[in-house]
Each structure stands twice: as C-alpha cells, then as structure tokens.
Length: 170
Length: 135
Image (tube, rainbow over all chains, first blue to last red; front, top):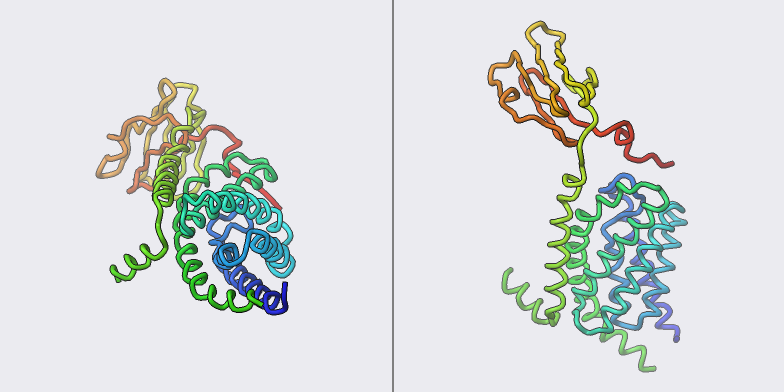
C-alpha cells in the first residue's frame, strides 16, 4: 500500500460519497424504505473491484455506507444499506469469479441483490410483509440501473487502468 | 448512436450469462407484478365514496340493497349485494357504464360511476387500511 494508492482510493471514496449525497437529495421512489436509491455510487465500487481486488472494493463500500449514514442519510439507512451492500458484494464476488458474466452482468447482479437485501431487512424490521410486493418493480429498476452503472464503470476502469498500473509498479 | 453502443458492447465482452440473467430477472419481475392481484382473495366489505369522501361501508356477507345519495338530488346510485358480490343496480347517470359493469367480489376491485363520482371498492378488513407506520 503506497501513498499514491492510498490517495487514489481516498479520492474515489470521496466520489462515491458525493454520488451518494446527490442521490440522497433526490426524492425516494419508495416512501417507506429509507435508503432505496439508484446506487450510482456503485460505479466507484465496481471500478475498484476490477482495478484492484475485492478487499479494496468491500472496504470502500463499507466506509462509504457508514460515512454517508453519519453525514447525511441517517442512522437507519446504515442498517439497510449494509444489508444490501454485503449481500450484493458476496454475489458480485462470486459472479466475477465465475467469469460467466462481464462487468455488466456483475453490476446487474449486484444491483438486484442490493435491493433484495434492503427489502428483506426492511420487511423484518418493519414487520410488514407487504413490502415484499415492491420487489418486482424494484428488480426491474435494478436491472436497468445495473446496466447503466456497469457501462459507466466499464469506461472508468478502462481509463483508470493505465493510471493504476503506473503507481502499482513501484 | 447505434454504432456507438454496438462498439461499446463488443468492447465490454458481453457474455451469454449477462443476457440470460437480465432476461430472467426481467421476466420474473414482470410476472411478479401480477402477484398482488392473485393474492387479493375475497373481500369482506365494500367501501363507498362520493367525490373522494368516504360515504359508507357495507358488508358483503349480508344480501341487501343500499342507496347512495349525493348532496345533489340528481345523484342517486343503488348497489345490490348478493351472494358476496356487489354490483350497481341503478344509477342516475347518463352513460350507465357502472350499471353494466359485472359484479365485484375480490379485494381492490372497484365499480366507478364517473359522472356521479361514486366509487365502490372491495376491501378485505381493517388491517389493510394502513400499510405500515414507522418512525
């Protein structure tokens, strides 16, 4: 872990935080569940996953969730976001490992499982099975945003790859 | 624009697994959208509202006819409950669409008389009035 890598990752954490903040400003499509958002910050997480390794991506994701929760989203959102984030990360890890999916597929899987994780935790906490009825519409939007996020992440990885190779060869 | 995305897709190295998972997820979700309707089940009562304001609630278990009178004397709809089903027996509206509607019995089903602004809706019981309350 050299200084350049630390700085680089630090900058990306900031980008992830900023995107989370921007999404937080947008009105929530589903009123009852705090923290159900478009997940644009996952562009950074996904890019880190492909640029470095799972450990880096996971730590950045956890950091971002906790920091965002403290800074703007509220403590309640941390629980839901952690549940969704962990579940989606495990799925993405195995999806990437299996090499059956490209970055788009991994992103879609991550997005859908993030939503599923959040809904399940919300159903348990709020003791309300009717929340599960949101799953179909959320899955559809997850597939769509997953594709968009995957696209953006792909280009991000392509452009940053050269930069990363430069300072990891120290 | 089209060639742009085509180039991008080939660059990304799109795999079969991607297409399969996307289609599968979309398919399951679209099917899942119909779940609430299937799950509805038979209703217990009918809520009548005029102009958006709750007017009365009628139980589906007892055969009866209920008159719905609006503020205006020209608005009068009569609903008939029979065998756990409700239908519009008569109405003072011009198009009579509501009268020709088939009877309703499952939760969330409605008969609407647009000119008179009368809506009758089947509800299951008290617990579906509030979806969830959280602090």
